[in-house]
Length: 320
Ligand code: BT5
Image 1 (cartoon, rainbow, N blue to C red):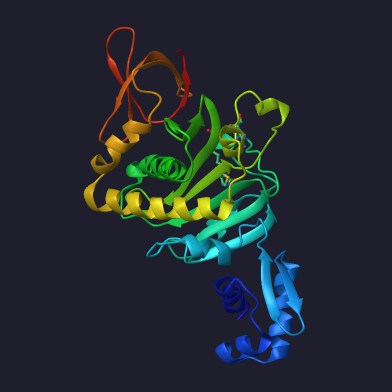
Image 2 (image 1 turned 135 degrees about the vertical axis):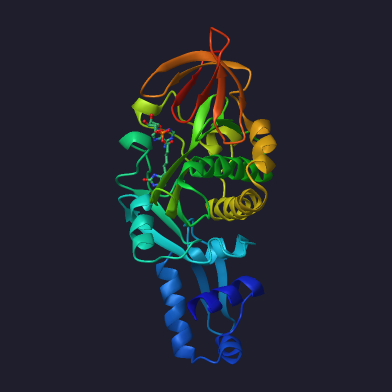
């Protein structure tokens, strides 16, 4: 009911009387008043005038599901949006939900993470209200060795959403970073639960610096935000909507037609290709020139001996 009242306020833009809301939705004036108060408590600025009724003045800058769903055009992704103010990690909550039988397409969001994670247990800086910290439950019909492609599919979708909403030129650094002018604005962390031959679920965690102006000293040189790059404050709910729309699109394309169907788009955004790279695979340090990604999503690097190395995972530094 609260969401319906909010929708009426948004649709009318002008004052709408308690009587009119009561007639449309079939609830008492007292119930309306209670829901309006609840909305005010969530940060909605609503003006009440005795003779005129209610008018929505301002929507809060929060990742509320009711705000995000207005931007969704998806068939299944993001229809269950789980909102949190402060939690340790959206990936952990999403995994907990998946373990309890949570559906594919469930999306967990937080205003702030107290233990946001990167790959290999690294920390992910996730302050309150400035970014998008979200995790998706996916259940793809693929074998476990194909799971790393989810990171690539997600990165393409995020880059495409940035392109749609800003004038910026995003670049994907294999496998999981989105950069602007060499600085990181987004990272993807894909985790999965699988048997030898089947995937139970995948959690695709996405962290995006949106309206941040400053960063802690340890990442100041390497991090950026959409606001720093574009010079304007962006509406986070709209970005979430655009990202989920794009993820569903590219995910389905990949599932139906294979990775080949998005490989060219990935290459269009890639900042690795034809550049000298150093890759730390944890087992080896490989120097060479990144020449392509193959049909399995692996990075192909031509080393000093002219041999092509297929890289499955690692940290890439660009040398020039
Ligand atoms: C990543 O790891 O880039 C994956 C980040 C995924 C974060 C999301 S937020 C929602 C979901 N819930 C989680 O708990 N995690 C996911 P990696 O490639 O390992 O990069 C980590 C490194 O990036 C750190 O060691 C820092 O150097 C740097 N870093 C940390 N926070 C950053 C930030 N906010 N912006 C840019 N760089 C950051």
